[in-house]
Length: 288
Image (cartoon, rainbow, N blue to C red; front, side):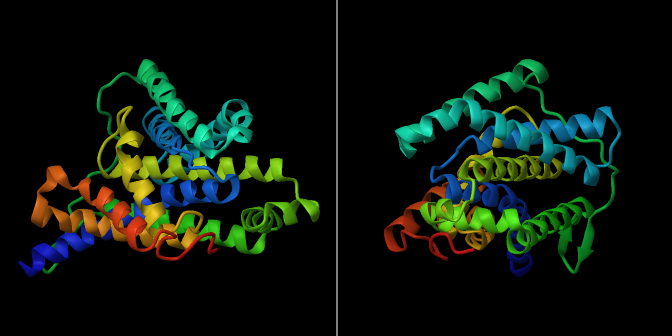
């Protein structure tokens, strides 16, 4: 029983580390643009399929294809926000959030039109799982964790040490003061859309590397992504990481009680629990 629980915890940490990447993208967009952009779901799918094309059609290794996934999803995010969501932002966050849900449906069907509904897998080498005592972990899972950690480290360095990263933090903390200091809010909005949706696309490919992909890949992931952001604190990048690990481990451990078919229930319960007892999340709001 001990090793079974330990295996579930390891699986949860792997899933949570991967989940942290799109959750950071979601919470970064919320922190700067001040609305929940649920289109991260479709951009996770866009990234997954962009990485698939790079890996399978062009023969790029998975660790290199994730850069293509990030780029395509990021560019798509900027275009979709600029022409579809940005005109709606003055009407309020609720309207814009609803529009982002509609955008998910549209983009999902565009992907379905080009790629169909079949499950697809990446062109990956086959290795045996590594075994430590009775705990197993796959080499591809380790590679996914390394890619996720590198992506998060690059983002942290970008936000901490670059001028544009500091501008993003300034707009998230106080948009009016940032405008007075001459920071171009529109440019920062485009940048956060590119980075946030790029991370969603990268995360979508990492999810696909661990399983497989289809047009609903991002849609299935949106609940745990949203739960991770809420649990950690909407607008808090460190909180998204903590929330993702919490949700990842919680979903795996819930299998012991609820069974695998009900694991998504944990996401709902986590959101309800946090909203009831700590509405601002574990690490509060906009805690960079």
